[in-house]
Image (cartoon, rainbow, N blue to C red):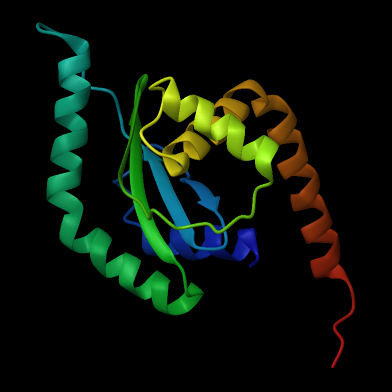
Length: 166
């Protein structure tokens, strides 16, 4: 899937007044997540965090029908689920995204790690323990993962400029 093509398609489909700039796209094999930045509420009386939460809730409610129509068209075009999210100031919320089962085979040492997390009450199941472990790795290696994703995007771009076969 060509990231630039997906970005261009969404740029053409999204109303100009929804977000303050281009959307962030997160793509994987199963889903495309579209995250836009909302303008922050004007400083005034009251709690700024509550004002941001209200802005996010209003956007979600007022744009639901149009977001679902765009998502349906994108799903037909790209064959992947579409999730929506927004950022407003320091708050970020993804509305609904897919929970996809992942099959794996683990040897005893890896299973013992998961069982330790379950036995210690960190997780309720091996599945939840695996999610916890993946999130922990993601948090502590975000710079490295970002560099790896950028390198993969560069390879994808070069591959796209190459000759087509067949």
